[in-house]
Length: 149
Image (cartoon, rainbow, N blue to C red):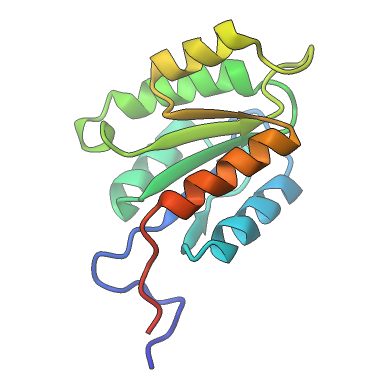
């Protein structure tokens, strides 16, 4: 029996990261547990992740998905810069990247901001809500799962 923490050949983790200005950690712990509950290995980069670190880890791990989380309300602004930097790298052009949480300090982002985040390179935008979590769960269910031997 193999060790479930040891990646299998071709096993792609889900990278979880807090936005560059977001020092919250419980959201990242919750996301890690949620993603693992859906059968995926997680590399949790923690809070306040600089773009260079996220890019380096993404290039190293070849993730199935990158999740950027925000609790402090600066997700929209931090997220725009992050995804722009990620998408500059040809090797990361096809990696699915999503952002979620509290994306605006004045409340949920509107359709215009969500559209701008998608246009900048996010595949999905999940607002802080029960609907956002349900949509995120459905997306996780659609990701290929690693084979547990």
